[in-house]
Length: 111
Ligand code: 2BA
Image 1 (tube, protein in one colour):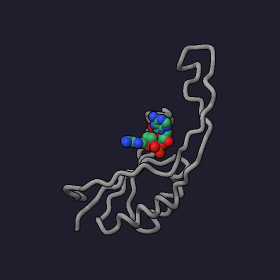
Image 2: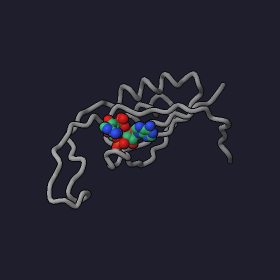
Image 3: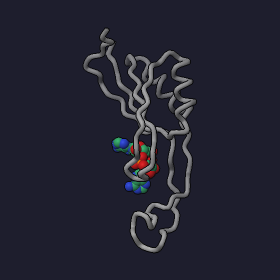
């Protein structure tokens, strides 16, 4: 069976429910703390290694646990622009998950 690596960028607040649900179904998951390049805010990246046949099941769990939300965001505050004015907030869609599914050449647990 081929192994796949699922990497998903999610919101920090979705991590607890997502990890609970993945472990309940027997999937292994590793959390990495990450930062989005656009919002420059912390987010969470999860790594999930699974056999190919389980990919859709894992994507289903991610979809159910990672909700899409709109948040008002000031993209260029004075602390970044150095100007004494704030750009008006714009609504940015966050959440859901940005998912990459990659082939795994080799997978081992070394002891
Ligand atoms: P950020 O780069 O902080 O982006 C957060 C959200 O801001 C994005 O959500 C998108 O809705 C919006 N956004 C990003 N770039 C934009 C732009 N140039 N103009 C207008 N709105 C923009 P998502 O697309 O769901 O991405 C969530 C996070 O996933 C990203 O956080 C980034 O950390 C990661 N990501 C997204 N696409 C990626 C990619 N191709 N490669 C690696 N990481 C990616």
